Length: 586
Image 1 (cartoon, one colour):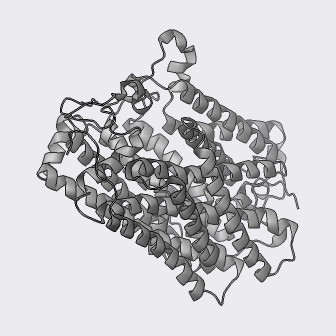
Image 2 (image 1 turned 60 degrees about the vertical axis):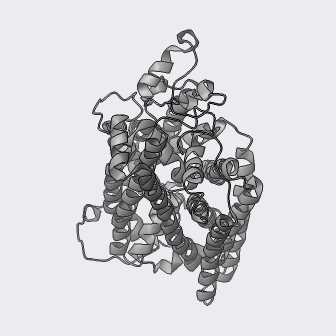
Image 3 (image 1 turned 60 degrees about the horizontal axis):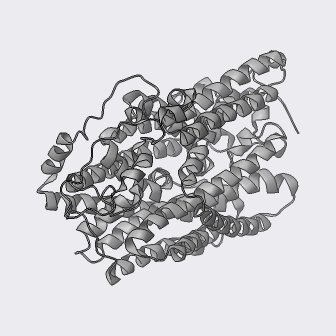
């Protein structure tokens, strides 16, 4: 072990464990469908009847963005760049506090179902909503495809069979069980993910002679120097890029992302909704700690023979699956548990995305057009859309398979969108002078700026002095295959272009840490939005509905202990940012 070469393949028991996990997830959907068959309303399907409690929602919040990419990618990050990724634990805490004390009271008080109800402030924005739908579906397809590709090349499992099976299972319990099925399945999958990490760490500790030996190896290899307080915004990961930029990025994910908001809005009281976010902190801390330590365990084992450089794996996302098959193959069923962990993350994210896409489509596109639909008709539409979006995401996975190196670029573009959208929310929630012209202009300018810097960073990756890859070795390998020195660049951030090939912006603007993309987009949107609003008469608006702004008693536990009931807005005053900024469209 740790000296290179081929590893074992899946055993019969591994397949049994993996298939059993998938069937267990499907069984939860069937159980929720049978249990709730007497209540088929849209509110029950999309929001669990707003009767969920904090603990399962907290676990679901954690699981829904801990996809298979996270399960496989975070340990590889720690293996190559060290433990600085753990600083995200601080960002998670900041994010949860801001979301719970600023965004949740407003959303919960107004009883929204779709966050796009807040975002839809001009008729032209309907086009942008459609584009966001496509981006969300494409991202979901990538979530299905990326871990399937890595695990296919390591375990030999049929790629397309796994892709289709994953999509069908998600369609099954989303269609039959709605949000309750998604949340309770997330709870089940969260346990599986954590068990997979624990299995890797425990076996690694036995092989290496204890956790202390792993820690010492990582210290000697420079993997524990996590706190870099350099304020340089061009460095990939420092304390400031992670705490400042990372916090804003995670706020954009948890405070305005439909699949997250839909979860805590499903809670029976405002207190339960807030508690779900605070409980989510514990889940995120536990997940990131186990994932990072799995990466450190992997470094301790492979410190003298890096499998990627040695040619044993063809992509960095295959490192953890390779380790699992290397150290756990002797224990039938345990590698299957890890594969279940990776796919539990994938199932969780895909099911969240499908349910969110259905909610947005029904609330923002179906109900405004067909206003006289009965609850039974809406219920059938919900289930039909779940099937449609499920197969759409499987189709997007097929597209992702053709994208090659563009995969990472597409994921980055998806992340860049959240910054300007967060700025749009903040603009409408806090500034009474903002109007629709300013908001739309700010959104467009913010998107242009973030896409410019993000796409430029993909074309001209930052140099190694900004990404800080840590040293690796192949000195202890029994044999060296065709070494991947030529393919190492995308992993470390080092580039093979000569200085003459790089434009002047490559080592400045395009080298901005990716964690600042969201912050940049938010600031640009707010500043441009306020300036344009002031120029176009925003200060002269009248008849503003003050209850659509964030109120003082909404902030930071003002009035704690007084649970709010959900009071949906009247149909003619459905919450939109146009109302928030005083521009009525109805």
